[in-house]
Amino acid sequence: MVKTAIVVWLSALAVALGTMPRVSAQQPASDAPSLQADGQAAFPDNYREWMFLSAGLGMNYGPNAPAAGQPQSFTNVYVNPSSYRAFMKTGAWPDRTMFVLEIRGSQVEGSINRSGYFQTGVRAIEANVKDSRLPGGWGFYNFGNKTAAVAPLPQSATCYTCHAENTAVEHTFVQFYPALMDVAKRMGTVRADYKEGQAIR
Image (tube, rainbow, N blue to C red; front, side, top):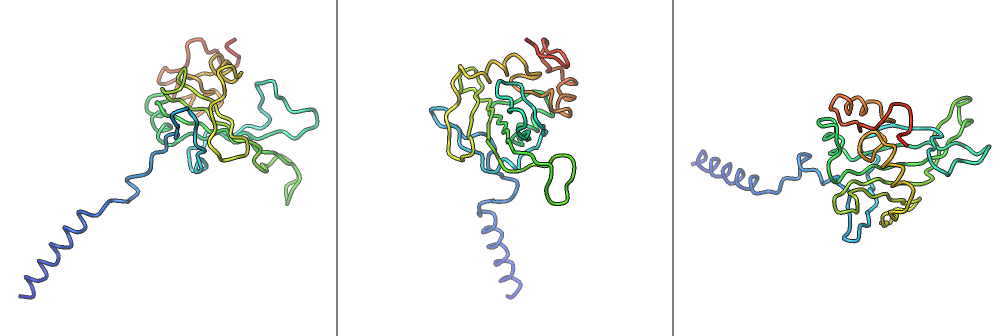
């Protein structure tokens, strides 16, 4: 009698567990960019948990070079994990890829540091999104230092031309991410008109 009751109880428990929703780590929320119908992108709150690609100090390939004597900026680049994994397999970025450029200040003296630079506060957040719903398949976003959703920059913005003409892989500066550049070379996805160490145009 006791044995029968145990068997019945275990059977009921198995059924109950089998019908419970699975909320394990095997079912993560999508890390793709969240775009609204008008192209606005939501701020990716957890981007610091994404794949870190590279950091630069004082990099500038646009008209907004810092004034003489001004502290250089650090630029930290992140990409959503699912797109990173796809790139490592194919050398290409899948649709719904999102890059985040975190721009931070720099400082020399502080705490025990006496030489070299370390990062300070966030100055601005920018993003580059590959999404077939956007004109030309790519969009550039400037969140500034806010976390509200923003519309893509207009197609007349210089970033569109710069990325179209000077990037090594699609509209992304993979040439500044050495580990990924190795993958692109191996997979044959580096642009045919890209020349190492110089601008395309």
